[in-house]
Image (cartoon, rainbow, N blue to C red; front, side, top):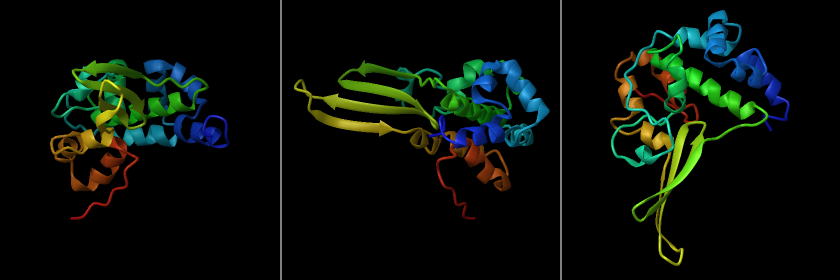
Length: 198
């Protein structure tokens, strides 16, 4: 619907001030120019959040065994796009980079040929499948019998990783004022409704 429907031009105007595929093709230099010109609402929002610096966690940039390790791990679009974004003028400005990574994900989704990264592999008795989603890496783990029956099945969503007690959300919110929490949570995980109770 977004790619072929009436929402695509609207998204193009609101987010990119350009066709998503053209914006995406601009690469880091093009995105920097877009950000600095502030011609779209998103570019202006990016400018507004660029001074919010939060700590980073180890980032899972590839759909591999890293995603099934315990402990805090950033599995968000920022982690996925970090190899590309580390050369950006916003390097070190975590919140702005997180928002820019979301823009890249959206532009790829709206482009004529969206590309989702994925992988599958074994880990002992477990069969693992990983796919890129709008919120980050989604992991499915299945343990099967030799006849193919499922013995155990687990899903590790990006939100599950983000919401751990030592995850992205807790670490980032601990370093910024309460007044910025709602905005920060929208940048981290826009799919989750938030109600902050003091």
